[in-house]
Length: 294
Image 1: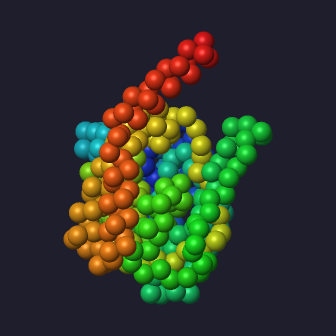
Image 2: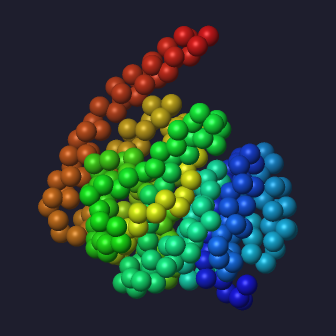
């Protein structure tokens, strides 16, 4: 490996000892070797930190472990930014502790950016990974509709599509580090759900991106994920409303002067007005489901 790696991978984790080693193995299995991995522990109280430390000791030149001061829990965006501050590679990407890279993820995205030097980031669809827990689980490859593969997208990039279909939001682009740092990284007010969409909106308001058709990322589906927990709590619509209010302000600050997009943000925000009622409906449905199960 060279003194300065080409790729920096940031993995954030909180109480994730069950799947962390598998995620790290998927980085070590990459078809390229000039990477570094920054594991950021976000206040774990299980054996995660000990496991991360052992994994780093096995490959001390490339794997590094970081914590917030006093081992605090500061949320997903702040943890990603901590990893970014330690990153030294020319390119940065992210791998959640319960997901996996397919072996050519780094190589393929890098080749894409090499072909398109104007793009600041390359991104592709993920696979919703159900089969990890059961052979009967049916995996689902994400589709990114209405986007031509290998096409450069100027601001606002994929953002209009995200507003119409949140399930189409892709994961973990490969981003050139210097413009990533210059734009401020992740939006730290988002500690959990919608932190990825806020980051992608910040990126796509400012920089051109390129989309590829290859599925290179396994997105593990399970009941303890941040998204699943937020949906069970009934707070997913309120969280979306907070994101849309932030997005409207971001649009006014740095977004393209696009009235169609402005109207789309306003329309999506209006659709979240009854979040309190829908939260209670969701809670009641969950309680009834539990009673039936018992």
